[in-house]
Image (cartoon, rainbow, N blue to C red; front, side, top):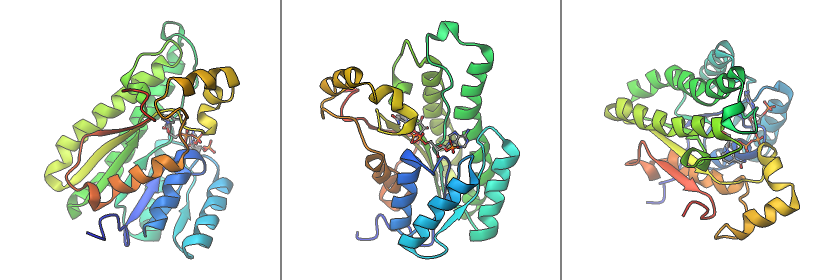
Length: 255
Ligand SMILES: NC(=O)c1ccc[n+]([C@@H]2O[C@H](COP(=O)([O-])OP(=O)(O)OC[C@H]3O[C@@H](n4cnc5c(N)ncnc54)[C@H](OP(=O)(O)O)[C@@H]3O)[C@@H](O)[C@H]2O)c1
């Protein structure tokens, strides 16, 4: 049972991996033996993170390929460059997402709503379409979507984002049904509040964070590294019989 989490020989693409949850996930995947592809909109930032990972885990562990998740051609380039450098894709982590609107859903502009749906749902679907044929042919692959506990709840402030994150749960369930016969698994992770730049507005204000902490069973918000173990679990054979599910990691908030 010692090799349950071993990812030696595996190749993982992680979108949004220069910071936060994606950055922590690439570190953990590399520590378990995977080659990792660092991606965000900024090539310099990708290269800086790839260099750090190479320094820690050996030259050639990480590849840097910038791609905006709203640009289908850029995502195709990300997948093509990964295959050129590493020859295969075994693990896809759809982690990058957008939330350009705070306020009641009733007041959101069509353009803002579309941006959220495009970046948080359609781009995941595109990437899954791009990588799944080789995974299905090999009868092995793991796709992980970083959703949110927002997808389990209503909100007066981030409603459209929550709609998109709820759709990610269903995207995983649906692809799990389609790909299950070929042993390609698709799961979500649903983090609660994690201390990253993305959620800064929700934890930086001392009064707001006091209320959040007091209503969280573990009495604190999470760190990006506390999501990384779930990524390794879902990527590895430790989770071989799990597909179409969502792992909630939220300090107990939703219980
Ligand atoms: N933090 C939380 O409390 C929390 C809770 C639940 C779920 N989540 C989810 O966790 C995921 C990661 O969020 P995080 O908190 O780790 O965010 P973060 O620390 O702000 O990191 C976001 C990463 O995504 C990249 N990115 C942003 N927009 C992008 C785009 N359009 N195309 C490609 N890359 C893009 C960023 O780099 P560039 O800006 O340079 O492109 C960065 O590498 C998201 O799906 C988010 O919804 C977060």
